[in-house]
Image 1 (spheres, helix red, strand yellow):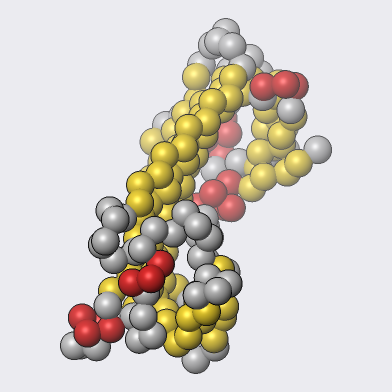
Image 2 (cartoon, helix red, strand yellow):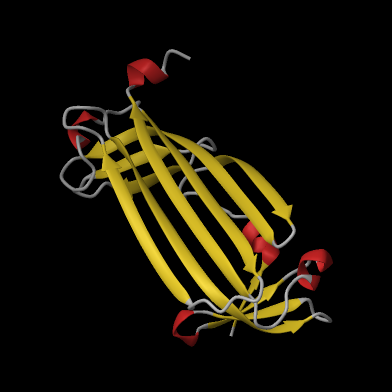
Amino acid sequence: MKILHVSIFSALLACSPFLLAQSSKEVTTTPGAAKTSQTVMTTATVTGIDPATRTISLKRADGKIVDVHAGEEVRNFDKIKVGDTVTTKHTQALSLDLKKNSSGIRERSESTSMTRAPAGAQPGGTVSRQVTVVADVVAVDKQDKMVTLRGPQDHVVDLKVADSDQLNRIKQGDQVRAVYTEALAVAVEPASTSSGK
């Protein structure tokens, strides 16, 4: 059985593994609902390019150099030059809504979208994904502050609810609707533009 803590949602860590980041987060709660989002901005400088393997060497803010493979989906790869700045913006958001006395169907849906830079432009693009899940509340343990949810395909999850006021609003037979959204935008600034700081 998987255990998820609400604090994980409020501390969505959305950092690319190869870059140091600056982040901002926001958490809001209302009776029976909670929303959290975090945006992480990262930058690195291109220090080397291997066109044969489509590998780009990036220098992080701490001086460490990391190699990244740019697949065929990276349009305009030939425009990337040593000295260019690669910037990413990664946003994650989660909203939870309590549906009282609901008898809806447990379900899960997912959608993905992607945009790429136009031919001839600087490399860049965005990819986003949204997952929506409706789950039944099958048990509430007020002593341990745990709520057990059963989602689609009978997947069971224990959710830690630290906020007593929120926990007191939940009872067996309710439903929870969760919407998770993730978006990543990547842009490459030419060295001539980024060096003019």
